[in-house]
Image (cartoon, rainbow, N blue to C red; front, side):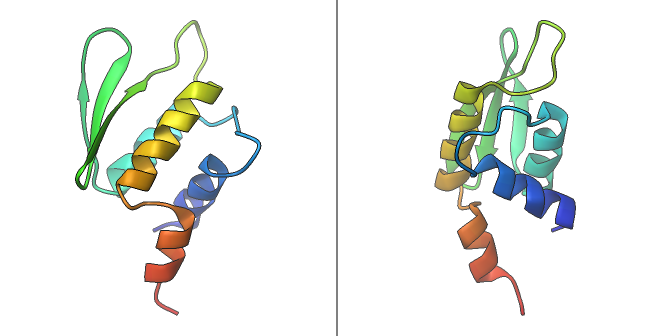
Length: 94
């Protein structure tokens, strides 16, 4: 995983919730993790990562950053899909 993706993964899980995350960068991370993504009605996107499935909302109204609730949904999906910073660090070769 590139350092950019590692940093983004850490940013997603930082507290307080980071609301300056670029949705395009998050899409890139999900693709890198092997997630399957499919557009559904409106600004929604169905994402399947390993055995976890969820729906993310694309930002609209001229912005590209994710709101608090979208980041929390993303956290939940990544956790269920086995892609947290702690799990990445545990698998990482030294």
